[in-house]
Length: 347
Ligand code: MRU
Image (cartoon, rainbow, N blue to C red):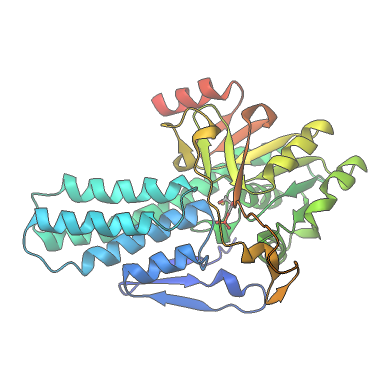
């Protein structure tokens, strides 16, 4: 299956498909320095936890290329501040910090090498993080597709496809893998207000891959579950705490509650890089608050009265006890998640 080119390292530049313009335009944005990448992450040119991690690693590599000093300590001080700047872009997806920590460790572990060699190693690591993400998604697909039968209807929220990763996707990767093994799956995609990732991105990429998709307003999920039209739910994740609580796009929690009420399995698909073993529970996951204009406006049209109070948390936390299984690149985790997560990290 062709993977979508979400992000690419080419000729010492980072090229990203500008997701703000989909589905009407396929436009690529090119960054030649780390500040451009930081801006692209913050402003959602690139989005989705694994894709943000890859972008941050590539941004750090661009930053390293521009550090003109001659000793390691000065190099590392500047490199750390570049990583810090990239880390300030979005607080919830842990893949961002996971990737930046790997980049910093690579620089430190190779401190004895000449600086130009360290920069080459950082570039190579950013590309490795990209390659590994695609491999992880393929593994998630392979493990997860056994949970899906031919003819199933599956509800998803937000976008957890090729666009949200280096390629292939996590939750949608499972659907693609099921499809590739001959199972016909119909996807219901929540539109995912306020940023409409479901309507604009999930629908676009499923159509592109020939998967049947029906877009619904977020408010319709309960109704169609009650009508018996949904056999399973599957979503991605931005950060998973060590007890299995999952932060994902705002609205995921209500889908999980509805799924439990209607006795429908609720699956989360994510690579191990999305699990934050340092956090005891979802209560510790930082939730990004975004510009309220995302709620007060649809496109350029204001839909609320002037001066009305508005909030805009971009993510919510689904408690582990609403989750049937977490499909990872190392296998399917089941409850109790604190045990299955700690086992997979100690393996
Ligand atoms: O705000 P976004 O668009 O970056 O949020 C994306 C999500 O919440 C995805 O569901 C999540 O990152 C999983 S991506 C495989």
